[in-house]
Length: 343
Image 1 (spheres, rainbow, N blue to C red):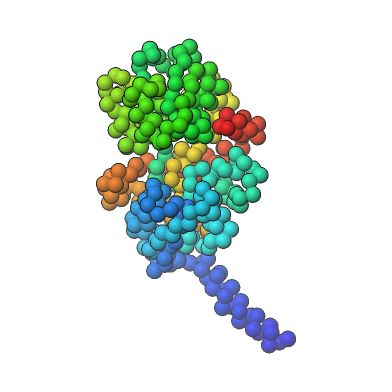
Image 2: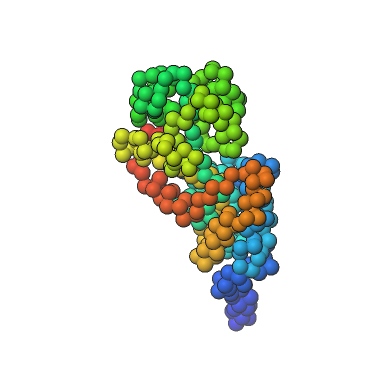
């Protein structure tokens, strides 16, 4: 019995004591010489993976102790595989961070009974996103519509890839919540084909879920020639390039309409989000958030991003956590109504 107690005490001192000591370390002591794993839900070579590798290269310089960051790809289930791993399996000490799909944060909101979602998005410590999306409502001028209000009287068509894409969902929301008469024409292979339809006058408009550099370059000739205009912005805030064009949230006449669009746009704000598991100590959360924010202002990172035509429009982790708190606090009937409009 006595021998067993001694062995148990030694085990505690060796392992339990080590864990306590690790928690007692300063962030600089903890991260010195350490390898941090960045688990991204994306496959190699895509946009999400590109941002993960950009951060892995530049962020370590801003973390006390200057650890290395190694990217590990964990695709599957539209990001849920990685999210579940980070929440339930990954080390909770700050040595593992993750990059998720933008819709993972609100999946449980839309489908509360989804057994695949084994995490509470609000309990992640969100690092932030290097990019947030603002969609644009590009409207040809031939129909004579001068503002979004004119579309309550003038019926138009808009090009879209599929019924469940923002290019179709946002117009249906505008029809139901604002009274517009917009008919999505679906089946285009991608955003470039949808824009080609707009250029060829096959459709009267295109409503985008985002607006990359390539997207803006494509619509710019039409805007400059006066063949099209930006009728509305599909995002939380106005894009500085279009300061006089309102957002869908701003024009909504009811509080419910504003809330529904805010929920719909939550994914856009999250852009390319990065997280820490929920159990990471607060001091390490702070230094990693500070490092994330600093890296996205760093001239070296910005130069490399520009060379790769990567958009950098950061949103902080604290802003994402606050946004998710607002979304999940919405009444269940709002979620049901939004889900119905999205189907």
